[in-house]
Image 1 (tube, protein in one colour):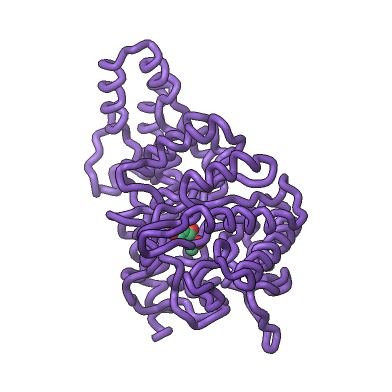
Image 2 (cartoon, helix red, strand yellow; image 1 turned 90 degrees about the vertical axis):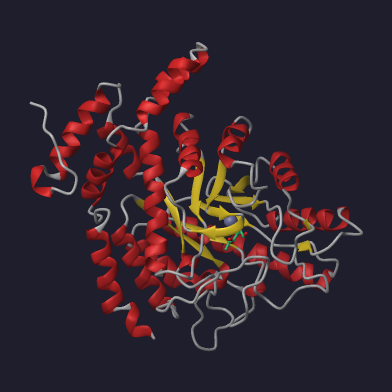
Length: 434
Ligand code: RNT
Ligand code: ZN
């Protein structure tokens, strides 16, 4: 018998009962929601350590540079590795799905008297992170930190600097990071994606665009000359259109990064950050374009508002569309997915968790669509029915599947349950940091 449910009336049906009803509705369209949940549970998504402390890291007290910015001064920021790890553990309680750890080199943890500069960092400076990852059965992704550091040329550049001393320092940093990435892969038994991003660029009209790009290319060539096993360490190159203070030119433009990846397919993969393009360009459209040519690609998932503002990812159209492109092209094992946003104006643990939960929603939503059927309609040129069906699919009871997924994963439910846990952690832990 059909049940009628009133929203908010929890007594009417349990999460499981609601799920069973939803499941039938999906099954009528040929969608297996149990299979969708089982698939998603095992797909790793990289959780970036830098949302927890506004991209400060532990190796310097300097300002955030490189064309990126955090705004806001919400209290309770993590100030030490222990606090950051505790916050990340809290985030892991708040989210469903499989978490992979994403570290920046600036998060090296030095024992007393151990401090070295970035060109000399070693695996041992990340041992505590390796132990942390092992404790939680996580793989680790890694990022050299080519920003927030005083060693820059007169033009503010590093990997594309005309100052050879500066450039060499950063090449050595990149090589050190390859060695650390290899250590992570070996220790965790999982692939380590190592992303190269530099904010190198110029504020105003350049006199030379080619020079910095040739030097950037040579720097990446030299970094990748450090030996590594490409099956275990996946270096990537992240492009960017502009940054704060580098509005006129970036060395690592989209064409540069993509061409580099295309000509070095046996050693590097391309990385697209959906905040790094002109505002009307969409990464959802670029994903299948790249998958046509590259066996693997990597993503930074963020939410740009008018610029690369790195707002917390929310369940709106573009990330949904990005997830659809990954899922309907059977590319969940070809796309390395990492989150990259940093909001300092709200509770950082909540910001962190909401973004991770959002990307899980996007993937689950994509897994619960009649993708093959919709493709067939497109291929048959039946655009009338395609529109009707795509609109109907938006009204499927996805919230019930999502609620059940959270229950299965032991994550809190949307709304009051989630808020209660955020408040508890604030009262017991974060508020005491002031
Ligand atoms: C900056 C890039 C880069 C950084 C992180 C911290 O615009 O997106 O990926 O956000 O490395
Ligand atoms: Zn990014």
